[in-house]
Image (cartoon, rainbow, N blue to C red):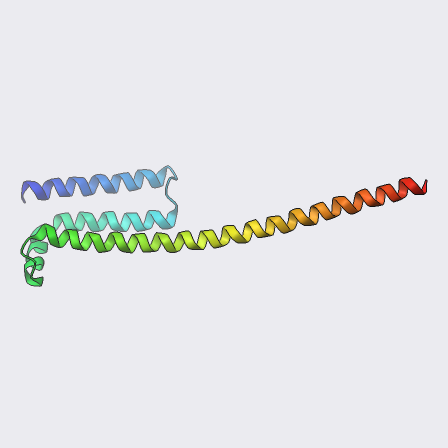
Length: 127
């Protein structure tokens, strides 16, 4: 086990600890926490299997293993970005619906206030 592999394992473990800590402090919701826990465990496995990745990179035709890891990480980041864009789009749609419902309820409340005032004035005029 080389120095780079040891440093990689330590960094991946620190990342795992950070995710667990953020989850315990309720900074991450369960769904996102699970995703980051899976990614941190994957990082630990990748760090432990660096020699295997080196052979896999050569088998695919990539002679420099860090380039292989960079390409894989790039696609993981793109996938995460797409996932979070989908979540954000859903949240925006929900927010728009809530804003519209709130505007409708406020309009109904204003109409009720107006009708109550009108009734009060009619009663006042009748007396």
